[in-house]
Amino acid sequence: MAKAKKNNTTKEPIEKQLWKSADKLRKNIDAAEYKHIVMGLIFLKYISDAFEELYGKLKNGEGEYAGADPEDKDEYKAENVFFVPETARWTHLQTKAKQPDIGKTVDEAMDAIEKENPSLRGVLPKVFARGNLDPTNLGGLIDLVGNIALGDAKARSADILGHVFEYFLGEFALAEGKKGGQFYTPRSVVELLVEMLEPNKGRVFDPCCGSGGMFVQSEKFVARHQGKVNDISIYGQESNQTTWRLAKMNLAIRGIDSSQVKWNNEGSFLNDSHKDLKADYVIANPPFNDSDWSGDLLRKDGRWKYGTPPAGNANYAWIQHFLYHLNPNGQAGFVLAKGSLTSKSSGEGDIRKELVDARLIDCIVNMPAKLFLNTQIPACLWFCSRNKANGKYRKRTDEILFIDARNLGHLISRRTKEFSADDIVTIADTYHNWRNPDGDYEDVKGFCASTSIDRVKELDYVLTPGRYVGLADEEDDFDFNERFAKLKAEFEEQLTEEKRLNALILENLGKVKING
Image 1: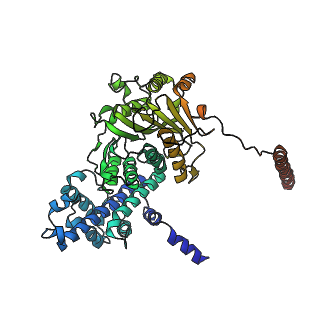
Image 2 (image 1 turned 60 degrees about the vertical axis):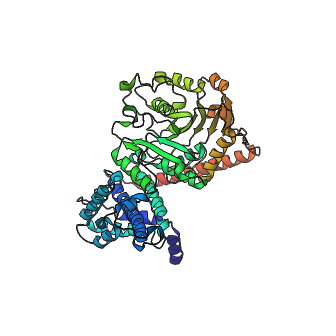
Image 3 (image 1 turned 90 degrees about the vertical axis):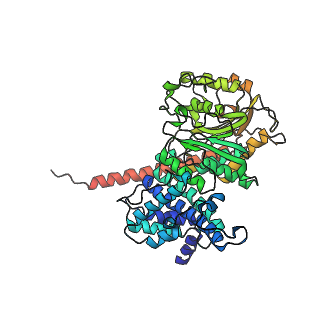
């Protein structure tokens, strides 16, 4: 038995093994703080690996590198590789890992890297010399991260480190629970958004970008479909500085240009960092039902073309902010609270009517519960298109596709669900078959319905998919007699158990002696 257990352990993915080991070293540090320590080290390992690989080529001086100086910073800049000074290289840190002042050494390494690379200034965490981080545990973490991609070709190590970085973000989000949801959108939700929207060329914008997951998945989508990753350019904004730092590291580790991912603490509504941007795609997961969005200060804002959103809820402000930033053929896919599909309070119903009448809404997906870490509020996906009559897809101006995906997804813990790869394909293919000129689409009772705008008007502009898709056909082989007999047997079994328990209680009561 022991041997079988050992084999199972060795088959466990490297990222899970690493997470368990890293979590053991956490001791008295909470996940929110520990996140920056671990992610900072993974990032440091990544840029050191990339530097060492190019350093080796420059030192050998063969072919195009003949006569090159391995300490010339311009050589690294030319190949989009961060220059790492000698005191910040991973090999140097590993030699110091067992020393009591290792925390100070790592902080100094982070400082040195920022000084040499302007794009990383203010990004890297300098939290390693704090008193609650035991030097022995930090040394253990350095050894652990140092083993990532060991034995693999250096060319693959960046991808492995990127995968580990992404996996750890998800695990930290789970560990932080509600707070974790503020920087992390569950991967299967991001994958579904990206798979449905298919952002393969042009400008991709996320004005509440968290740790950058939407961008990473967009790049993966392009790579998986044999596109050119450089055909996409990334634009983002984040109001939480520590989350923005994670985003910058997450993108850098993937080799994605993050120069247009901006931070300011006022946020996208009050201080739009990309005022003039007209994007091909908007992909986002804004905060649900945000009441603290400074709506009172923006009553006359030019973005509210379809109606002034209520000061007490940002949902319809976000929708109009997204639409404002789309070019004439642009598309948006985003997550919102399910209440946005039916709400009529404070003029939201009027704005929704305007959006439907303007033929901007393409598809609505109702989502299962428990997908999000930071809220139990039911969620949905909106897909909007600036031009539903364009030549790329079939003309669907007077239609909206409704998909009810509440029965999809599976539990990964008592509180959390995720979509499987098959679930994502099922939903995305339904949308593509409906949208594409050569698509093989048909309505499926209880799951999807292509609905006319006139029908949506009849139902008073309510956009809940359940109103349109109907109920799934019940199985024809239902046997009433069999079901009745089964229920009767279960009831009789419960009665017998109740009699037994009552008798036991009476017997025990009889044994109780009351002292007079």
